[in-house]
Length: 247
Ligand code: SF4
Image (cartoon, rainbow, N blue to C red; front, side, top):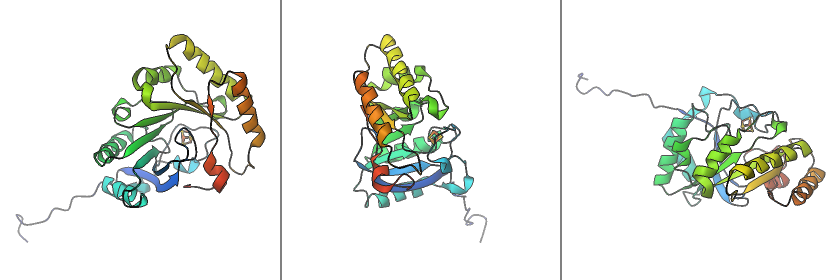
């Protein structure tokens, strides 16, 4: 083969670190009950104490696949594109090392008319991605997580993304509830409107029986506080059990 005709084999970039891509019915937050394809990125450096997906923490290069493979799997998991809802989650899909790849995925999925939700850990507002997605589930980290969400991040969400985000807080105990209520009241003083869903998810730990009393407490505390939050449990854990993955 002459130099002119020689094929140059370019390595295929496997730069999307993916834990899993699977179909399931959303089990929590305001999209509860909607079937979607979950694209779960591998790698998270946030370190919530009560994280139920610690298997997603490691930034394992072995789990890299290319963009075309991600799109193809989303298509096939969604019954050849019939399911048009995608939730990009993790891990932390907004970790700086993931951002360029998640941005490429979002652009590619939007070209194919997918509705895209992204799960944000609350530590970063990533405008280039948030501007393009259809919905953002933004965490407010409670004391039991050992992580703090800066209120300025929620203020930025209110200022820029009022119509397309929710705040989600996992409630383990009364301290978590009071901290969340305090954050809400602080924001009430600085913002003209808190017209977005703020969802409380009663914690449902792995290897735990259904947390009935915790759930009832969170419902009561919210009622006492004037019902400023929406309490939505984790339906998928009731159905499949707290330890089941990819459901
Ligand atoms: S941000 Fe999510 S994946 Fe990361 S530690 Fe917290 S709960 Fe776990």
